Image (tube, rainbow, N blue to C red; front, top):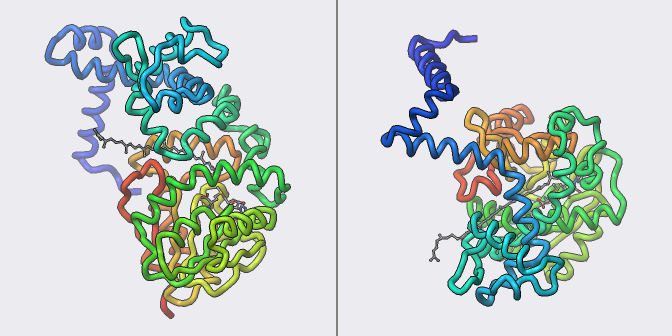
Length: 376
Ligand SMILES: CC(C)=CCC/C(C)=C/CC/C(C)=C/C=C/C(C)=C/C=C/C=C(C)/C=C/C=C(C)/C=C/C=C(C)/C=C/CC(C)(C)O
Ligand SMILES: C[S@@+](CC[C@H](N)C(=O)[O-])C[C@H]1O[C@@H](n2cnc3c(N)ncnc32)[C@H](O)[C@@H]1O
């Protein structure tokens, strides 16, 4: 390993000195008292406060979602008495919840003791899938109640792992498939919009969406791209639902549906592009290698692989990629978010070329990498 240079050693010493100061209660008190440093001290203090309180904020959001308050406020502000009607809360407790929601920008206090939508409550109404994610979080939070146990949880011992019961090689029953596919499809709209915005499918003839669930991503791609045809590949009980969904969307004449396991079966051929949307982060690296090998084998020379999922920021960790999905995949007891650099290395090792990360519009929703099967 290369030794750090003089500048990097100096920067390390400066950082240690700065961290020592910040960790000193006396320094914190002086920085808060001194008008020129008060702003910085308060920003750090407030950021730490938010981390300490985080779960409470999330539960305020969950209470609002469960009582469907944002939808009820869509038509205009209401007082706590009216808002409490039809809920188990009395007016006084509803006001307490609404005050908390207003502090978090989910609601706004309006004149006359009424509460209206806040910017984040309104954004939630326009971001399909977010509510469904919020509603499934109690399950994740039960696994998170002991975060240290979470990191060492035996395979499939957590609630989240049992819910997403398809991962691994033991297959899935029809009821499980219905529950997870619904949640997956609900969050897919945002992922599809971001993926297709950064990588339109204009020059693709046949797109095969591998691990394509109910076909939500393929449907979005087909709707956005006249002339495009597609294949959805997933486990047999899942593709049964994909077939019905494509019929319902009126897209079955442009779609072929194929069932099988990408860990065991060859993928159908006939596609000049393959997409893997939120598939690899569910799996451990040996399975990822098998999936990439299967995709390469299914593509013609020059064919394209489009990889879209939340990614680790690597040396620049991100809240979505490293904090949320790092722990989410820990709760799954398999898989992990990988950085763009790690994906690109795995793609090269599998035989792909020209792998590159595309720039994102909403990186907290997904990141996209494109690679090619070499032309010869
Ligand atoms: C109009 C005026 C006056 C001003 C305009 C000002 C302006 C520009 C306002 C912006 C308003 C606006 C357009 C806001 C948009 C907000 C959006 C789009 C918010 C989107 C939020 C998305 C979120 C929070 C997504 C969360 C997704 C999650 C948590 C997904 C989780 C997925 C999981 C857990 C999947 C697990 C699958 C497994 C099993 C691991 O593979
Ligand atoms: C996290 S979901 C993503 C679904 C969809 N691409 C999306 O983004 O909404 C992972 C998908 O991979 C599928 N899958 C898991 N193991 C599989 C396997 N061995 N063979 C084929 N598909 C599999 C699951 O059924 C599921 O639909």
